[in-house]
Image (cartoon, rainbow, N blue to C red; front, side):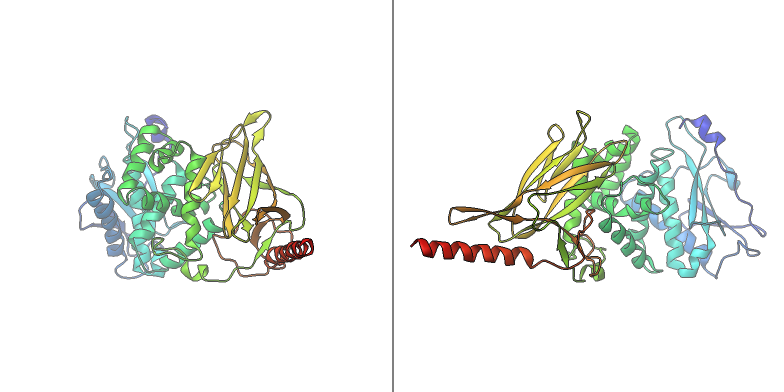
Length: 439
């Protein structure tokens, strides 16, 4: 967006409901505007200080310590060059950050508003809301306007990584549950909720690409490339967004059931619930079903391979009108790009393996045609093609362990985990019995 258009779209500063007062933040970079009368008055004493504290905390962490750019001072709006923050009652949302003073290099200053009612959840929640907004001002120092979904995902990550209390932990769990439950939703979806949930994706980038410094690298790439996909590919060290998504899916998988310590704020309480998985298509040879994928999304399909010397062949068709779609696939530790729109992999291992498919840049959702072979088992050089391995997804009538489901609709709501090992046992008995008769 050019500087002239951004100037025309600038939002006027708010007028508070009472006589305006100001407080400079301890760090001196921000001026908090507030009043003591009317609907915009703070909820409780100390709210103005909580806002100032939250603003300074994020700048101290990400700009001073990590080395990200400082928010750009304004040209005198609000009385001086300090970045202005208005504490008032808003019509929805906890805060907003507005670009101001656009520059020819594609950056801008900003002013901020924070809703007083966040303080009802405690001073920590109010500080976090202010911290979220000031991180947007830091983003404007890289590019203005930034990609919306990545801007909100990054600011939400900062908010939940830098602050505790005020219900933030419960909010964090909800973000995790949303992403783990619905990987098939596009990472760049902006619907007023999902862009905040994608803080989990930003955590993946930070955790796997060098810690806090990765955040600066991400926004440097966004500024230089002007494209969120290209910036993610560069930071993730991948050649495509679909391969980046496969790496994201592999990183997410161990969150449940182990709730491993490196996923420092995964929803551990939810992950400890029991899951009853339902094999799909048992008895059908072979099993074929569609897997819906939106652009920039992925899906987990849990494959049953039991015992460990059994395997499942997975085939899928991602071709479209004679062309190819940007699809990647694999299991944890192994990833491939689809060749001419088609994919094949033999999945081996003990009992349950997550097979992943990811769809990169596309204009419309696709339906991958996924076909599973019969369960293939090698017993004493006797090759048995027994039963459909099936795909698994949680039962609607059972507790759901987030992170272990996929976008495939179950054909049954009855737990049938016993079918494959039971049927395999029958086949083994019959094979041994046949061998005895021959002897």
